[in-house]
Image (tube, rainbow, N blue to C red; front, side):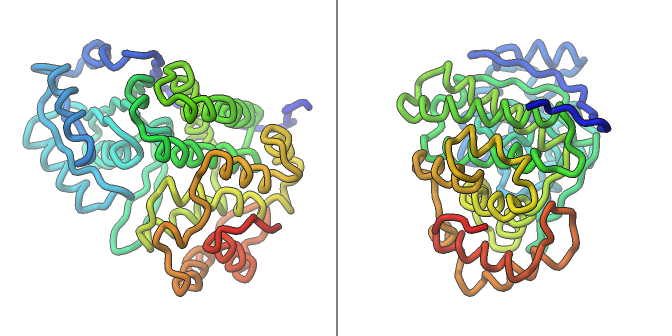
Length: 357
């Protein structure tokens, strides 16, 4: 099937991307190439030790370490980190970690214009985008601007080799969600569709190998390749219902980011499949199911991914409120966003049942 469209526009960001086991050791070279000499290293509290290792790696190029990155990028944490960057005279930030740390680096860049180098340790894909989601007052808002697009990404398979299998699976499904929604995006192009399908294929092939042997560097490298491609899709086309629901559940109910994407993905795809069956047909074929939503649900089961919002701490009594938040502001989606249908989607996701159209 040809992916040609008679009319389309695509913009690809000018980002330097390097893959390879051990590529993190070129970090100093990348800083030098950009004329940078004082990096503030960012991590979550759980990865502070890894941040210290990067400080040792950079030596005098390390201006300091800030290890308070948090899920959903709280504005208060971002402002504290900006103050730290100014205090140590940083001329760039090096974000080592997943979406939380990458988000913090972007938040600092938004406020200071400091260049960013990202070294991912999950498959979040945020590093490949000019998108920043921030949380304040119980609401998560998203902005898109070139100011938050990282300049350099270093994908080092050695850094994800120790990622626990459970986190590997949920992070991968989070990345796959970017590609799945990109297939029916209003502003999709043949380029974004190629990246989406190749990114999902990479995860389909490599993720089972990682589960069998988490130390398999080749498989880990291919999952990072999938994450980059899926992240590129997120950064070049618009998202729809799936991402709106996940931002609502994360920002307003503090559900964990990757796990929430894992649970919602097959349900949101099944919802939109009624209006985008042609665009999603390759997903059903790729993952071997009668529909794309069912195929992704079955893949999640095989990968032992979480299936129910209730297992993530969501209260059933909050589903009505979640529906209200997710449907109160209009946004484009291939199928009309109807409160009753969204409420049924969330109920199935809360129960952990198979998705319904």
